[in-house]
Length: 161
Image (cartoon, rainbow, N blue to C red):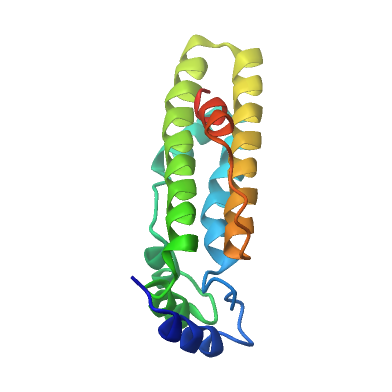
């Protein structure tokens, strides 16, 4: 549990950086998901890209920054331990949903490629891309301090690819 004095001190530490002083989170983490969205969108035109999609793996927030060239990466890694639960919990839940979508999408797209069903492959890749984008929008909102998340019905619909 992060206490308010600790949180306030960290908010000051991240001022003038690309880390949100509202939440202590950075949108750069979403680049990890932008990568898989771009790969998934290429699959209908280049089915062999599914292999790159299957190589993509979930990466924790802190691991993403350890491996990144983000200018404030050390600060982002350290600040994450001080993100209040009111932001961290919905952020991590959103990321879990996105990871699940990618995993399921890779299985579905791989099966559609094997079947040779190009129309459904294109439709599924598009649906997955849109679904991931919706979750990235939610994650971005959380990073910037929004309490708006998706309803359980919206989450269920997005996960039922």
